[in-house]
Length: 632
Image 1 (cartoon, rainbow, N blue to C red):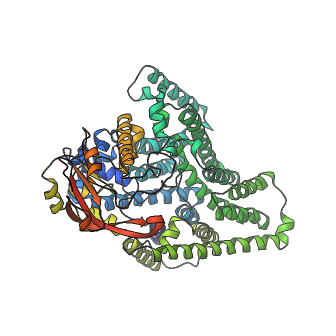
Image 2 (cartoon, one colour; image 1 turned 180 degrees about the vertical axis):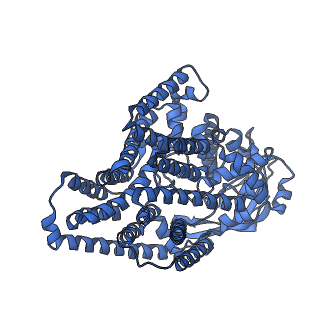
Image 3 (spheres, helix red, strand yellow; image 1 turned 120 degrees about the vertical axis):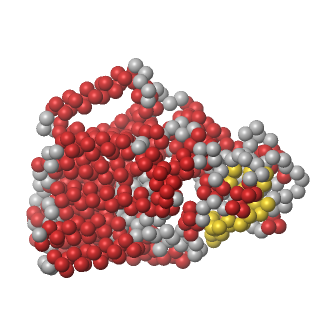
């Protein structure tokens, strides 16, 4: 009983450690997409008329929106997002702890968990998508199901693994693919019938595609030149030939770490790491050939490169397992582990990839490093790891503190949040985990352990919400603005909110005429792509926004802070047959809003001043009707 009590307390503390390193910052990233979709479904004649939802091509492939909708209806967007994010992270953390215990053993699971919690979690070319995100999206739930499926696979529970894999596919089929592939390869390594079944399944899919089965027919459909040219602009992360070198260097580093983990482990654990590596390489090859060089619609939409999330997680877990195994082997092997640690202190670089590859090569070749271990070389190598870790922490803290000090109060992230976001503590935390697993601290009574764990969990829960962006908070929290709704009630229709994204949804209950946020789903809808591109180009031609990478990879000057909404520009724009009902734009003062109704927003949006000068708070807005334009 006491042993079970101690283990439960340890698991709770590990889950709290993950949450501590993954604070909640509100409706950010892709949670904007899913929360907006829920609002649209609840208001089909209002927000639902936004082209983003009217021309949507992706929401029907996931069970998640149907589950999210009633939650938003009953709790509101803010609370629903918090509940979903917390639930998702809790399930993900629990699944990771279970998998870690199977990989490293109960007493050493802390090493794997801390490494996975601290290491870089990004896996796309823009470093904007992460595994284990504390946000309201189906990805974190699908990842949790995949981790549970992998744990069941290691336990020999094939039926349970299939159940979890199916659940992941229902929530987010794209994220489930990596897990399904790894399970098939894992079993196929010892039983060829799995590989035959996987090959037969692939043949059936291609056959169904050739016969024109719905959705699957996209597998044989090339993307037309016009659509492809548009996607290669804002969605260039879909196409590996446009990725910067640092992305490939990070992937090589992760691959070398996973391969080294496969070398130093045995049995089912080794087979799992090999399976993940094989799937990641195959997914990238598929993405490169049929998702970029000769792009087929379904391959591009399925985004096989997302298998990188499992490779990134396996690299973090592999680092911990390498540390445990190499440290136990003795001083010579510890030099190899020191090289691996150094590589991750300079990750996303050619040097980092080379050092990880060197560590792998030395271990595979069984190079005799005993003469270095017996001398001072090994000691100085570890001193270098410590000094570089300290240097990175100090240097990044100074940069983060300077950024925070320069930012206005309403857009001021805490320095430690910026450091977490930059995974500055990744290697020190992972090394701490290896140390704790290798040399467990002194034993304490179950009651003391439970009390300490409970106190730690309460502390993390109290500090988990880090919503430092006041505008983001006010956007959702303040809800519909009656004064704004009354002004816009004179004319139904969409709103063009210059400088905005979600304001029309939350504050006015109106669809956007055009906004950057609508570009999030263009890969799934050709019609949405064409509509969005044409409208954004019209705004660029008007001088109301700058391209700035919105519809192309060419970065230009940022959007104007105060767009020129002069009479002649409005006349020309409002003459469009599909013109919006209203134009809303920020203004510096009420005197700059001749012919418009002035309204003050409940929150200030911050934008950089001219020439990247100090940030300016924008909350005063001019509202123009597009029904009829008169002289100022």
